[in-house]
Each structure stands twice: as C-alpha cells, then as structure tokens.
Amino acid sequence: MYQGDCLDLMFHTASDSIDLIFADPPFNLSKIYPSKINDQLMDRDYLSWCETWLKDCIRILKPGGSLFLWNLPKWNTYLSQFLNQYLTFRH
Image 1 (cartoon, rainbow, N blue to C red):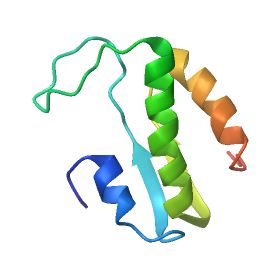
Image 2 (cartoon, rainbow, N blue to C red):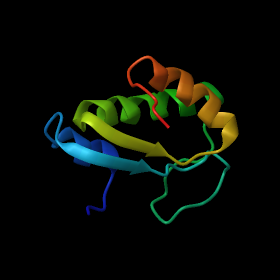
Image 3 (cartoon, rainbow, N blue to C red):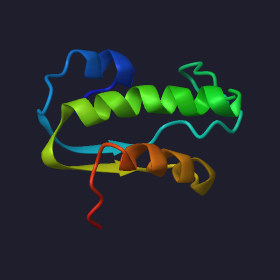
C-alpha cells in the first residue's frame, strides 16, 4: 500500500502490473482536505482530471484485473461512459 498523489505514484508504476485498483477520489463537493486539493472545480475540469488518472489506472491494470471506482452517481454516469471505451465490465 502506498500513500501519495496518485498521478505521481502511477507515473512510476509499470504497465500491466496491478491486479486491483480501488479509487476513491475527492467528489468535487467544495470540501477542505488536509492535502489542500482543489475540491471546487468546474464540472468539465473535474471530469478531465478524473480521466487523466483513470487513463493511468487503465495503463497499470493487468489484463483481467479489477478497477473499483467509488464516487457520486452524478460523476459515475460520465466516468462509466469513459471507462467503457477501454475496459470490459463483467459484474
């Protein structure tokens, strides 16, 4: 288990090397986090940010691996469309 900025950590992770990813990103609800992450983005900017780290998740995920995404239904409807372009949903 690692703690850090996911974009930094995934940059140094080999492709097709991770069996399971559980992602629980900030929900863009204007909360204040100790890390000072901006949780008040325009919708398009938030979705673009999510697509950036999801692309890296896809890259490092092993074939047949599992990706779990915990987010609000508002965001998951968009993100599932994005993920459907790259991954096969089985469950």
